[in-house]
Length: 181
Image 1: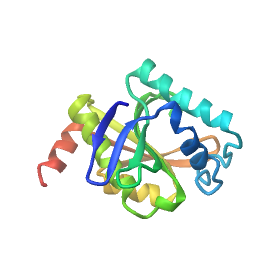
Image 2: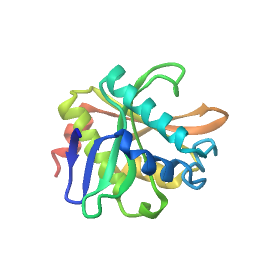
Image 3: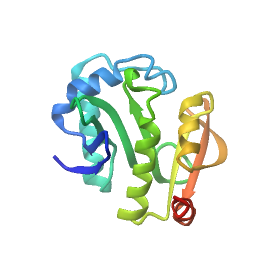
């Protein structure tokens, strides 16, 4: 198991094949998929395919989404982190910050906590020059998290027929933000 980040309450590590039940609980929930095309998975085999897709990103791009685990219970909360995105924006590729959590963990600050830690990892460990993120314009909670983590709104763009906000944060801006803490 490759742990990348540990906070007071969370372990953030590579997604492993044994996370299949957690991925299934996460991605079979229609509420979780409200702003993701409304196509939740329906089988364990699809959960395995999700894991294979993410683990392939580790090999192909050196980065991919990570499992987020509750330190006290060992529960699979969802995933968060960075990935190299080459499909959302037609005009350019970028390192994307994203997160997805089981409904019972919403509203607990986990998205913001993991977003900030992922940005830190991207800028400090990977030495990325900038990190982007996208959220459906109607997904109020996700847009709040991205702003709270320090990303700046850039523009609205169309993705699969729905308007999305695009955010960006440069390493120089991150360094200025973190120097205040």
